[in-house]
Amino acid sequence: MRLAGTLLAIAALTALGGCAHRPADDPADPLEPVNRAVFRFNETADRYALRPVAKVYAKVTPAPARTGIGNFFDNLQEPRNIVNAILQAKFVQASKNFGRLLLNTTAGLGGFIDVASDVGLEKHEEGLGQTLGYWGVGEGWYLMLPLLGPSTNRDLVGFVGDSFVNPSFYLPGRYDVYAISANAVNLVNVRANLLSADGLLQQQFDRYLFVRTAYLQQRWSLIHDGNPPLEDFDLPDDDGDSDDGATAGK
Image 1: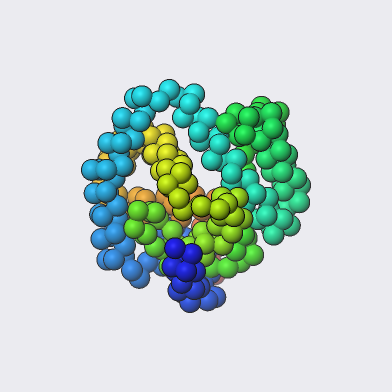
Image 2: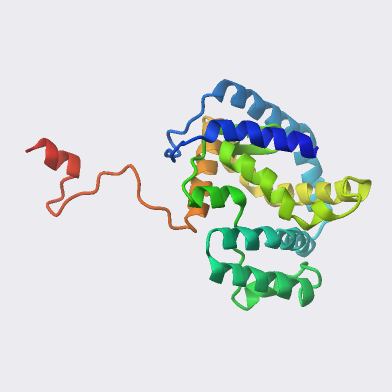
């Protein structure tokens, strides 16, 4: 498993090169026919396997319990958030993430209760894919991964790299039945919390394009901490004309 992930990351690096950011409505998607086939496979797997399990799970598991499980697995990601905040020179944010980890692990009963948010230490996601983007590495090609969903070359490299700062990576027997069961519970829990969004997706004329655009916009926003720069727009001058219009009139 580790070798396969490393090989995938190496393959992804070959497509990154000097790629710059592209707008979400005009991504680099040379593998679109393959990506669409994988997307259809993922939809089928979700329709006949994951979604039915998630619906049953949501019915038998109280909402507070689902929230607690989500909090627990989010807490396991805090070391990743801390490391990547440091790599982006966001030292204040790194200290806040460390505070979240310490507070939720202790007072939050191992992370099941998000007491940190109650005292103003809000969740702030950071990952290696975001770190690479922060330092100007292009996203490369858009990818639709089997079962894992949307990604890019940059985020695939980040996904593999982030695994090395996940505490579970260093536990003995991380591939035993208990670890696999825990990951399965996390997957089903996440899917159950997304059931309410199914209607929106089904309303889209082209679900593949909708997911691709939404994913790339969300990743671009995360890289810029929710304040992405304005791009690909002609800003009006003082007279209300765009720059292009003013230039054309000269």
